[in-house]
Length: 329
Image (cartoon, rainbow, N blue to C red; front, side):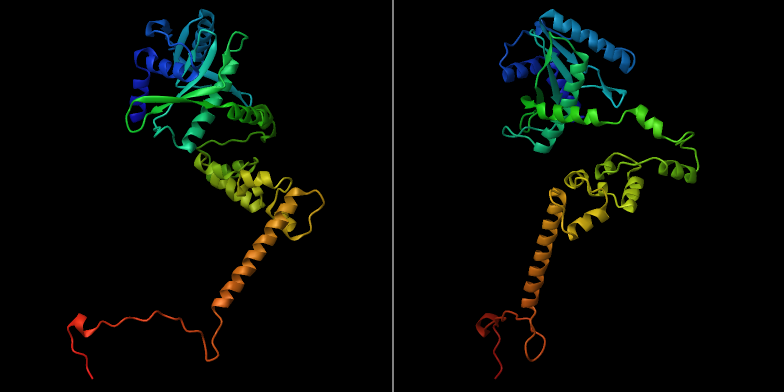
């Protein structure tokens, strides 16, 4: 509820506050509220809203004025399928520059915000920017390389904003989309007659899930109900994917845990950077274990008369003047 209330406040009066914040950050002349067009984007279904958004963007670029699009609907092709995306807002400047506006409820305290939340907002805005590039294709328009992040200032509900450079996130997302396997290619390897019907028996569902390949990563546990099944398969197969994507990327051509352990024990081949790193890590681990064992043995050396006694600090006795008792003789 707090996020919705803050977004409504930021978009009040035809988005006058959003336009003001954007102009302050990019150095543009601030228009009057009456000079900002806010087209109606309502339509039936996501496809209808996407079509209305495309028409509104074309009209805004051709109008040579300011336009604010409230909750537009964009499209992006992901692995051969059309995905619908809904950013918080978009602006079109008189020169045709398009800016993605992302409104978040986490605060900006003393000019800084949570880096993890800002990074997530930047990645989200980068996806919107890629979709906007496809929707607003044309030489007369361009998508700004930085998105406008709008958040509450300090502990108040007043909007403040800053630009977030999303070029790196856009490039990374573009590479990831290019590497995705298309749905047609996935359908070709699915066995004929395969069914994942919810009303099927547990045995048939288990057989159906086991008949298709799984690409497990620890991040799947937060978003996929089949993640535990895929994790069990990855562990049973000894796949390095179970260790996480960063580890998988560092291991190069090593795809199984058994290969990783073997590479850590054996002499690496010349030029095999992954095997050399594993050997070095294994050597450092062995040295650390040996050093720890030596230090532990040094503290537990037994005395000649028997096991080492634990030395305890002496306990000070309270004097008679303190306790009020007369000592016995």
